[in-house]
Amino acid sequence: MSGNHHDTSEHGPAARVKALEQLLIEKGLIDSAGIDQIVDAYENKIGPRNGARVVARAWTDPAFKKRLLTDAVAACGELGIAGPEGGHMVAVENTPRVHNMVVCTLCSCYPWPVLGLPPVWYKSFAYRSRAVSDPRGVLRDFGLELPDDVEIRVWDSSAEQRYLVLPERPPGTENFTEDELAALVTRDSMIGVAKVAPAKKQ
Amino acid sequence: MNGIHDMGGMDGFGPVVPERDEPVFHEEWEKRVFGLTNFVLGRIGRNVDEFRHAIERIPPARYLSSSYYERWLQAAETLLREHGILTREELDGLPDAKLAAAAKPAAQPAAPERKRPKASARFKPGDRVLVRNINPPGHTRCPRYARGKRGVIRRDYGTYVFPDTNAHRAGENAQHVYSVEFSSRELWGKSAPERVMLDLWEDYLEPADESRSRGKPRARARSAAAKRTRNKGRKR
Image 1 (cartoon, rainbow over the protein chains, first blue to last red):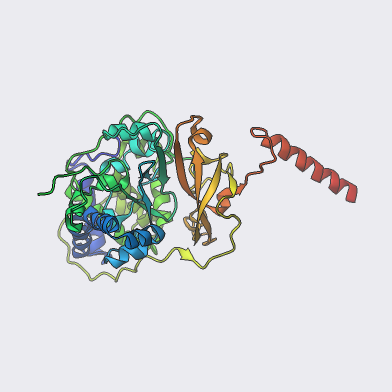
Image 2: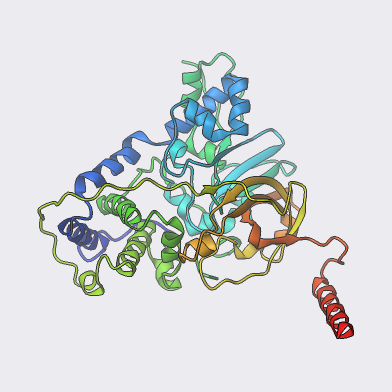
C-alpha cells in the first residue's frame, strides 16, 4: 500500500493506460516513439552513475568541490550533466559532525539529472511521513546507526531546489582513481540514507 | 489544501522498506504513464503546480490505495478532461487498444524557467521567521507540520513563481524562496540534534517577533489590534 506497484491484471491500470495512449495517438496528440524515447532516457542514460561521477570529482578536485557546493548546477554542467528537475540543484556536504538527508514530504521531488527517477521507497508514505520527524529511525530502517551527537539535517524539497548529498569519502581510498571512487558511490549515499562503504582496491 | 499528500510528521505507515536492485520501472504500463504524462504536461504549458494539485485532489482513500504511477495516471486524466483535450465520455469509455495510425504530434515545448528576476527580499539569512498559520483551500507548498512554527532563514534562493497562485492560473506572483531551518524541538518537541531545512516562499512567512513571550503571540496580537482600534477612535 505504501506507494508500491501492484495490480497488473487486464482490469488494472495496464489496460486503461494502453487505451488512453491509443486515444491520444488517434487524436494526434502523442506518438509512441516519443514515449519510448523518454522512457529509454530514464531507464538507460540518466541515473545515479551521473551523480557518482560528480561525487568522485568533488572528492579528488577541491576546486570542483568548492564550485559544486556554491553552484551545483554549474558544476554538474561542467561534466555535461543537466536536464529536467535539475535547473536548481543544491549539493550539501556530509561531515563527521553533520549528516544530510533528502526527502520530499509533499510529493516526490528529486534531482533527476544526477540520480535519475526516484526509487519506490523514496516515494513511499513511510519515508515521506517519517523522514522529517524521525530521521534517526528512518536511517535505522536502512541499517545506518548514527552516533547521538551527529547532527542530522533533513532537506525537505518543498520548492524548486533539488538536493544532492555529497557523502564522506571512505577511508582507505587515498590511492583510488576518480573512476574507482565513482564505482563506490551508491544512489542511497547521495540521498543521505547510507554512507559510502570502503572497498578494497582490485 | 490540507490533503493526505501533506504527510510530513504522520505516523502509522510502518518502516521504510528499500528494494534491492530495484528497476527504474516495475511494469510496462508505468513506463507508458511516465512518458504519456510528460506529453500531457507539454500540452498544458508545463504547469507542474497544476499537475501536483491534480494529484492532491485525488480523494484520500483512493490516494492511499493507489500506487505512485496510478496517481500520475489519475492526475493526467484529470488534466486532459479539465483542459478539454478529452471529454468525460471519452475517458469513461476508453476503447480497447487497437493500433491506430499515428498522426504526427505537435512538437513539445521545453519546460519553462520558473526563476524570475530578483525582487526585493523581505528577509535575509539569519532572520528569525514565523510560518504563517495558513490553510489555503487550493494548492500550496507550505506543509502543515511547519505552520505556526519558528525558524531561521539560512539561504535566499532568489525569486520564483508562486505555486499557490500559478497552480490555479491566477498569476505568477513571483517571490523569494528561502531555505528555513527548524529545530526538532520547535517542530516535534524533542531535543535530538536534528533539524529540518524547508524551502518556503516569502508569503508563507512573517517576522518572528522576539519581543513576544513565546506561546502567547495571540494575546499580544489582540492587544495590538485593540490599541489600533482605540487610536482610530481617537482620530474620529
